[in-house]
Length: 253
Length: 253
Image (cartoon, rainbow over all chains, first blue to last red; front, side, top):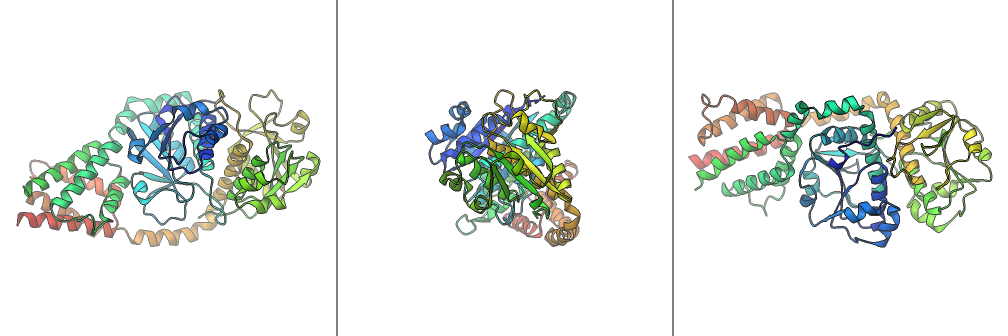
């Protein structure tokens, strides 16, 4: 029997700046097949659109409930784990995981908080800034001579692995994941919003102490983001770091 | 690194009586992405067709090489293992396996003979006679309330599992390549000694700005160490962080 994870509502699909509305519809169909329902669209080129509805083929309820956002940050509101998909060739210093591991991780963490699975533009994928907001990147294996995976295919593969991971959880395992112990452990990670506030505070402080001039060093903040996103800070740790920033700022006043 | 199975030529995709040429094109694209090339079409409704070519999006070589057959038996010529996909609700006395097991089995058997992965009609799937020619049936898990998987999506999931199985087979073969890559990667990480210098510098700075009094907060440095050890800093990143510390210290002088 197919088991739909009861925490599947905690897993959202985020599509950024999608050009072809047909891809949005195809992704919605695929999501519904795999038991997911929450679709976030960041600045889609055309939406709503008849091609999206046609391709959704009965999953148009997901389209009408889709949340259209004007920024990636808005689409990540409330998420504690953000996984982005990218073409594997990119030279990025970031932790890569396979689609299978991404499915398992998403299902594990969905027991206690919200998870975003992020899919970039058809041609160009995710920008470096967007990657900077992802905790890990998902690498889908493809033929190196023909690696341009359709975005709905990428959604298909990742959501299939989510469904497989939900299925692998027996009812007993499921209860275990939900046990207060695990919940308490995972709950401690800082939310995306709090990480953004930390980065704003960090940038402000670096400007205050004349370490950063944004126009002259556009790469500094992305590099710093990359450090702290990789580590996946707990809220308590963010509080300590912001305490240091407050103290530093006061030196200048 | 993605490795294409050297026996991938022994695995063919058979699509029976497909109605929509777009689905044939989408399936070709998906196959090529996943490193498979041999497509057999049993009495397709419309083929060749511009919609198939458009959806193939660069995988039109698979379409032009596709073998169009007038019977299922013809498409199975030379095959020693035949796996069919069906909707899971069907009451059939047949051995069912998951897509993952189907991928593993196909890859195992492709070492010695030819394998057919069979996909039925969009609406009605495979007939009982066709099922009778399959050794096993592949069951793809879906949402029971919305289980009508697009045929190209089914091809995507099964061929993804084939590629995953080829990859798992060849981890040994590629350990040499990967180990030298990993070595080069590890070189960039900061050494333990340099991490110690960074922690000393951090502690000194926190004392300078009156954030830390070691005796009163013995837990602060261990907590900060825990953040930066977890992230595994690169030397370049240590340099940036120490630059910030230097600038901060100068504020007090």
